Image 1 (cartoon, helix red, strand yellow):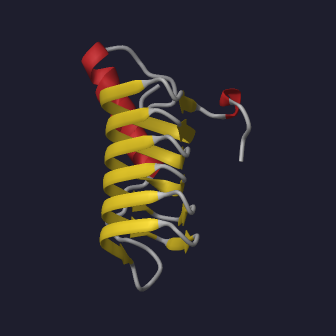
Image 2: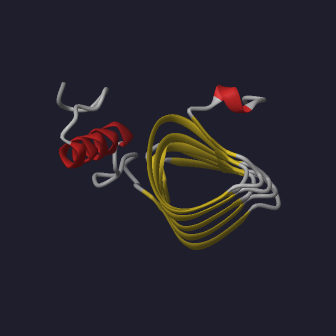
Length: 145
């Protein structure tokens, strides 16, 4: 685990509350504060005091804090002893420590992959293309250069 906020592409500190967000992060995000909104991220870390409420998708996640609503991962979900997840949970593989709490609809694809699981890079390209269309300026890393 990274030890300071410069090791992440996106970081929300413990004194931060971000509401109405729609984020697409091609990398690692660490949340020690609170986010309410949509988050597409390659790897999500929710710290012990962190809280993410909304539609979350990505490849992997490590949860020490709280996640609510929808969590859809194509890879591994790790829920630490202090972790709490409530809602619709889909994952590729899972590791739960003793004391972890999961409440809601919990599922994985029996064959090993979700046909409808969002791919972070596809969602990121769609997001950056939409932003480019709104601003009529090219976005670095978007579908159009």
